[in-house]
Length: 264
Image (cartoon, rainbow, N blue to C red; front, top):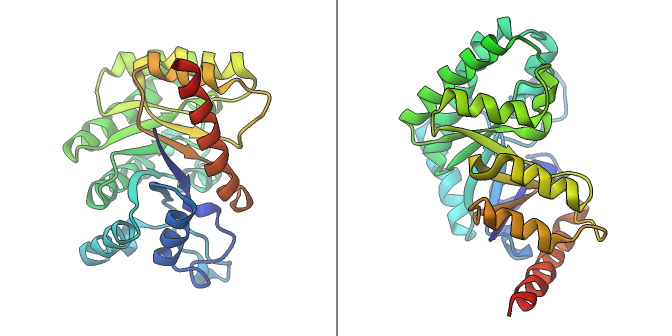
């Protein structure tokens, strides 16, 4: 399994740490991939510039430059994360106002294809709505994402915010829509049993994986085994603060080594 990390956790602004320099730092730490957040640039409005990229600010040439900069550091960009959805939901708390949100997801899918990313983490932030409303939006954006060869992964751990139940109902939603371009981005939480349950509940619907800081109380051998049963062996993406970037790499290497030794 390869390691990636959310680039947006760097504390420096993009002006202080340009994207290509952040790529080089992550590669030196031992990561093979980087997850980029899609967020609008608000520096012009007097806010401190946030780390991320925005489709409307990147023409084909700039997209090619980002992809080339990552490759020059030895990194892939396997996933994007549509983090703009949190702010969008602040102004559009109901799914009835997600027409523009759906358009932005499709723009992210087009951007992902241009950057070579396979999957996008999507969600509705804190917006709520009915089953039919959520299904309609997800069916529409999945059909569009399929045109670009990109998989949308709704984050299972925050699906409950829509007001339609927990991850188990997201599983039902994905099965009901039945489009391979809509899967589940899994973020296991809690103790060993809870993390295993989060993975097994999704099964082969998993398209990508987030992980919080490594927890010494968790038996990751069981977590790895659950991922194997689900047929997942792609990227393990750390969603951690910058001060945990280095220790997450070394800690994961130790866990993987111990797991492999236990199997021999």
